[in-house]
Length: 111
Length: 110
Image (tube, rainbow over all chains, first blue to last red; front, side, top):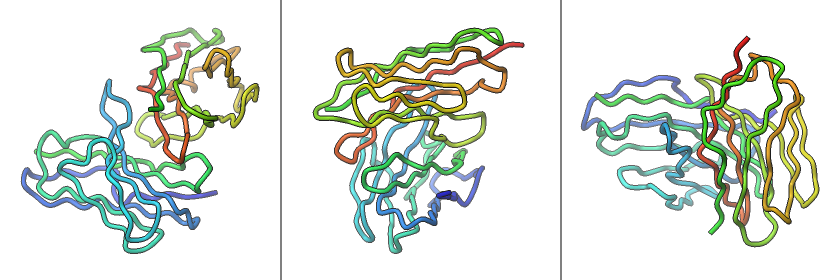
């Protein structure tokens, strides 16, 4: 089975810190995605990538950036964390025409 | 653009009750349709999918039929269990872009 691994299940960071969320997949998928999940808002797409060193903005990219230096790894970066970025962050990967495989999520709290 | 609308929750049922969670979609072309399930504290897991009209996806007693004429993909289960308590997401994939519904929280009481 495809595995998508997010490095942390829970994180607590201070306002203004630079935060890195890491995601690794082990099945050579081309596509990788970062979502945030908030109550009543469902999943909102932050950034996605269809190839190494390629990135595209999703619906809510403000305050975030991403890095994809290797095919298997897709990092989400909060340049200066703020309390409104407290959320559950979900990484996913997929082949071009298949459904998504999700990681277990990282629950980030910014204090 | 493509979008998915699913019934708002929360839904609370007794064990062995019949479950329906409604999902309708708007899309151009011929999207694939999915149901994902999220158990407490976990990420989303693929529950079932259908890739063309009249296909029926099924898994773990859950079923959904891709109805092009009504643009729907309703999730059903004949007899729910306490272990089915989770949040269920309907999703659509068209042009390599996945769109999710807002999620429906299901609680099953013994």
